[in-house]
Image 1: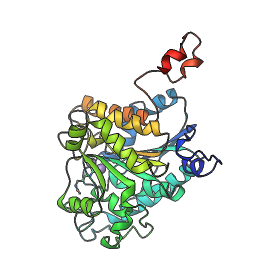
Image 2: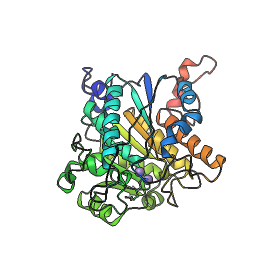
Image 3: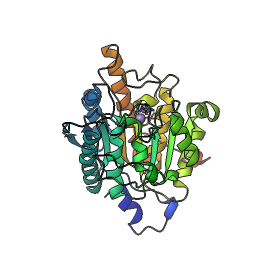
Image 4: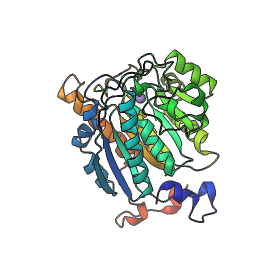
Length: 348
Ligand SMILES: NC(=[NH2+])NCCC[C@H](N)C(=O)O
Ligand SMILES: [Mn+2]
Ligand SMILES: [Mn+2]
């Protein structure tokens, strides 16, 4: 059962205090796509992440893992730029395909992991998720805000614009872009939180401020600490009601020393521990419904080791989002016969 149906149905009157049961199945879907930006290679992200051992790690977490393989995308011929937007029809068609696949996987009851590919894929991934779970909220972990409109974009690359397609409040700022007639905005700006920002374009800054979007830059993380950042983020999204979470994780949120194989690296990013703390906290809500892991580009690492480090970091982030802990085993302590526990003492 999708997490949104479990939340709204089930007859539980406990509301905020009820913990939804853990999803029994995780589906993995590859989206080998790169036309949302200009550098080749990011279409090989899904393979690099699988080769780093993703499926083995997830089965080790006690899930039934379904590998849905990779989608196949077609390049639309004569895909001329619209305004300055590059490959609009190709990106639009790929995202339409992706949104259908995501919607079906969520509808079938899986927690879905989407492997990119560039971040323009979030248009289809979040839209497909929203088709099943209209009240989802979005956590965007990234060096970039990816909220440019075609007018504000300095590059014309659609991987810098996906959030603008989603937000209802930006509807009148979005022109009709060829390839995107199937989309319509579905998210309110208050249902979105950014974590890790450190490279925000002037037009994006204006939008973040105008729409009063909750965001935490790397400076905010330095100031508050990641624990407080997660507390405020989750409170912002979940205090009114429990709702499914879409996590869109751009690997360039990490410091380039940890994730070098990516197209738009920015210095001063998340540490390994900050990244893992973010995903542990998201897992602990019990509300993660879909996650994207995007922008791993195995053609951009300086060495094979650099590429493998980036892909294996992606695997760690995904596993942690799905419940891998730093404390060790999952079995609840009273299921382990060899451990004698004084529960009275534990409660102290
Ligand atoms: N998903 C990403 N890596 N996005 C980078 C975006 C960079 C820049 N802000 C742009 O609009 O082109
Ligand atoms: Mn980014
Ligand atoms: Mn991004």
